[in-house]
Image (cartoon, rainbow, N blue to C red; front, side, top):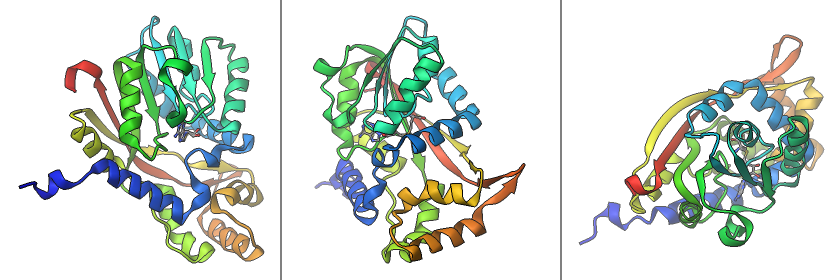
Length: 283
Ligand SMILES: C[S@@+](CC[C@H](N)C(=O)[O-])C[C@H]1O[C@@H](n2cnc3c(N)ncnc32)[C@H](O)[C@@H]1O
């Protein structure tokens, strides 16, 4: 007889939690919130302020000057640019217009020429037609917006000749808590968070993959010039359409923003998890 544990299809748990999250807050899809250049640039600036996270990610990835790196959900190039400065080649997969345009600007600014950009969702990427495998390192960092995570990981395994690194969240993130507070007031329904690293670990386990796991806390406060800037930045994510909704968001920000050296800071911190494995070693 099958045990309860064996009967759980963890890929289905992932898919249904993603769907629940999408249904509760349709505009907050992991790639749709980065369509605008402004939000992409804000993400780049925040990453530069929390530079420690980027540096640690780069030095704790097994990259040599000969390495070929596949960066899935590369965003504005937070990792792709420093990887390109250390490795032979980077392919950056990124679907969001805003992110891709900032990534290209940053490639110019840093005179980085060894990045190929594939503007697609990972689900739409053909390893044969869109990429040049094999890649020594395949990395997806806080970019697992894929409903069928098992197929997404199988495709990563196909593209990799050696390492796969995934970064994801553990426990409620700062935005889960923020939207949990606000969603009912803004939209009259409960906010449902997306799947976390417990589900991811179980999906990998059911695939016969037993990854290394490292857990850490990340401070990722966001800085704004004024209350108006903060409102403008959060409006799309909060899906503000009416004056009443704008007033709810404004009141929340007035309570939460902290003044620091002449700017306003939205304090945020969350627990992050790195899972990584060598393709033929543990699977
Ligand atoms: C929070 S950013 C992270 C950027 C970068 N990886 C980093 O660690 O700084 C997440 C990125 O993943 C991308 N993304 C979300 N779902 C994706 C998918 N299904 N396929 C490819 N990229 C995706 C988003 O468009 C966004 O640019």
